[in-house]
Amino acid sequence: MHNDIDKILVNEQEIAQICQNLGKQITHDYQGKRPILVGLLKGCIPFMSDLSRHIGLYVDMEFMAVSSYHGGISTSGDVKIRKDLDISIADRDVLIVEDIVDTASTIMTIINLFRHRGAASVKVVTLLDKPGGRIHDFTPDYIGKTIPKAFVVGYGLDYDELYRNLPYVGVLKPKVYND
Ligand code: 5GP
Image (cartoon, rainbow, N blue to C red; front, side, top):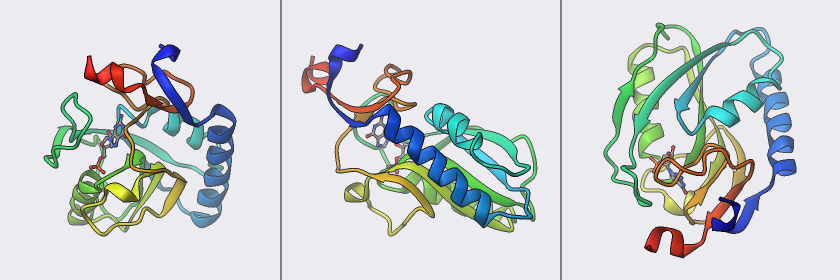
């Protein structure tokens, strides 16, 4: 698996540092509150797990499954909800946990849905931000690292359901998706 990676963009030490820093900031900003962390499956899993352990507050942890990619490497812009939340978010502070924001279609759809459902506040924490891919004007509230417009895998991010278990984020060798 490691041989399929051309270049590491965010290594394990950097990811650990990002989770620590973001956790500290979130703990500070939500002091006295009980936010709901909403992870977007499946990409959020490693990040949600590591980040949440640096948040020193009472939190609820919920998951949603949405999809905008269909096994390829470019976005379709068509967002589908495959698994919805199990609890009401009315009057609650919601913090959406994303792996990466690219065009921002997914996140804008979810934010609008949560506002419509009456959340007290809706914020977004993303491990990676790819502002070069935007088709909507959107800036996440918390960003782990800003990266150039490239297709990345690892630490939750897949290519055709593989590479989610890489402990770092990297760029695939072009031959992997050209073959
Ligand atoms: P957006 O709606 O912002 O275009 O895309 C968000 C979703 O697309 C992410 O949650 C992720 O699932 C997928 N995505 C966007 N960029 C990448 C990428 O570089 N690599 C992978 N593996 N998935 C991506």
